[in-house]
Length: 335
Ligand SMILES: Nc1nc2c(c(=O)[nH]1)N[C@H]1C(S)=C(S)[C@@H](COP(=O)(O)O)O[C@H]1N2
Ligand SMILES: [Mo]
Image 1 (cartoon, rainbow, N blue to C red):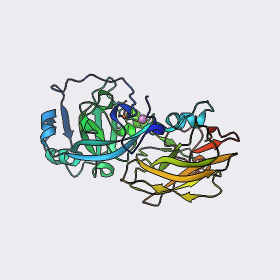
Image 2 (tube, protein in one colour):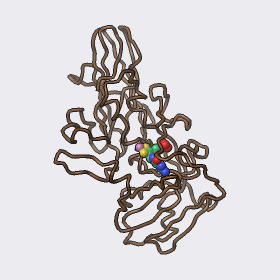
Image 3 (cartoon, rainbow, N blue to C red):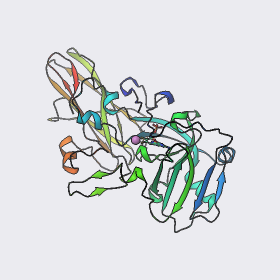
Image 4 (cartoon, helix red, strand yellow):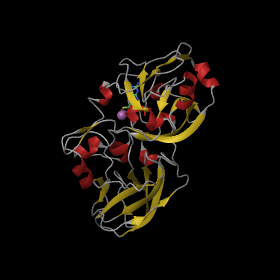
């Protein structure tokens, strides 16, 4: 895993070479002239597309975040030192993705009405694959070949990957080579042994695909040391359900909250910047941010999230983050 230095980012677009990258089985080297995408299963016309075929079809671009559903878990578990915003939550990035809408491809292949699920399979060493319910993604899913105006980088799925705005990163299969339509899920390793949530009842929640609202203050943060005076509290917020509607910021550990300013553009399923001027009087302070999205969903506190899951769960840690400002102005990650 390589992460994004979110504390140093300006604007909302992550440069391709700073976009976090996660791969379970290495980065395959794919000759674009030999690459093929197979579309089959519950379709009237099984099809094989090469890169030129894909580029001929109408394209669309969308700015959206991709976040690993394991983002944040290691910092929340361990008390290890040196937790910068990048270390805490750097497995999220935001880019402009360009490609062919999945809906166009499925129209070409003549998806049958009985098709409910899609299997996306990769050409990497592990044949990494995921089942995705069609109804959840058909609106804006892309077979993407462009990232921030250039071809995908090898680490991000060159020549083509699936981009599913708002959905957990692990479902956005890179180096895609096969799409199969079916009536039910395929129960692959990445949706059974991993990426599931343990609920308090002991039940396992599967296919928890939508990334819920989250935010993190990126400045002031570790390793900054601040003196009394004016500071601008800055950070990023995002929601897989749509636009960020508001971000509240607290400097007293959640006792009182103030509404932060959202910087334009505020795009659905994209990183959104927030800021709030703050006069630091010296001494201890606890900085927190809490995002609300346009559906009314509010980012949970750490205690609320703990009530919703059993201890030891690994994914979807979107609870409110807190930075502790010590008496001497040094800032540390707290929770
Ligand atoms: N083929 C393939 N696709 C994959 C993965 C992988 O290991 N192999 N990792 C997934 C995971 S866990 C994440 S979080 C995202 C990360 O996308 P990125 O590396 O472009 O940021 O890719 C997903 N797609
Ligand atoms: Mo991931």
